[in-house]
Length: 363
Ligand code: MEV
Image (cartoon, rainbow, N blue to C red; front, side):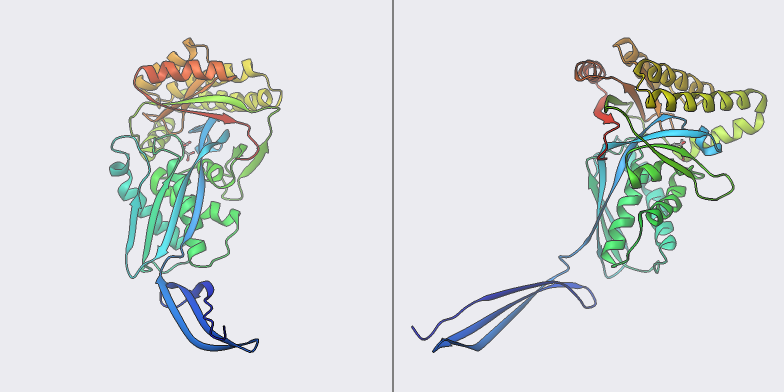
């Protein structure tokens, strides 16, 4: 048959005009004597289907929250939940659609801080603040205080913006941008949360108080360890918690300085115990760390109750994680059986729980 129509499909996803379009072209041809003659072309545009995407890890702090803000050492582990973001250029405004599962009141409490954090982010990235962006935030990491959800979202959004605007940005730079954004949530952050959110893994962290590069060292475990996270369901304001500690420390150095010294010793001993895979010791040191956090006034009755419950169910150790004043506690529960037991006990009282592992090389 001499007449033949052939559809040819070309998909050119990155043709950039004022907005991004997806261009599809169909060629119609006529075949005669082994030759193809072009008889028609149809081109279709699909508006703005291309977008930037990015993710950031959630975290638990095993040793040293609050103390790290003042230059003490801390140990943090990423968890296997992430905040994910998608960003598309828009005609105007910063429009955020936040679809994360959260504790009640989390989104409302953090809304203004989230807007400020994105403004800070754009500044740190050298982007015109009038740039219109549609931002979607979701992922598996719940918006519970203490799990680094704000830092994870900053890392995810910064990565997605960079991809959408075709900016090549290193992880080191993403970490710096997220640190600037984190100031909106924590006032004077140490940088431990954004570092975990950016790089993942298990890390030793020490802030450089002179403003130089922080000390960040990856730690490795012989085998991953099961953990349980319990959420009090109470939303906490990290900025208020961090400021409170700084004020009390300034007013009462005779009480606070020795506690800070003890926390430093606990973190060093914790590092050694992790490297030796001494589970009993790691747990004891987590309990000790929780006691120090109680002394500096950042625990709460719900956190103490969950810590106590986890310990009574056989957890090797438990402590609050993150800023405290609500938020989450983390328990060391080696083995699936113990993890399940502690998890069920907390869940049985009506609290939200997460199971995770630390020391997994891939996150
Ligand atoms: C929050 O996850 C940890 C704090 O130490 C604040 C910080 O280090 O930025 C409370």
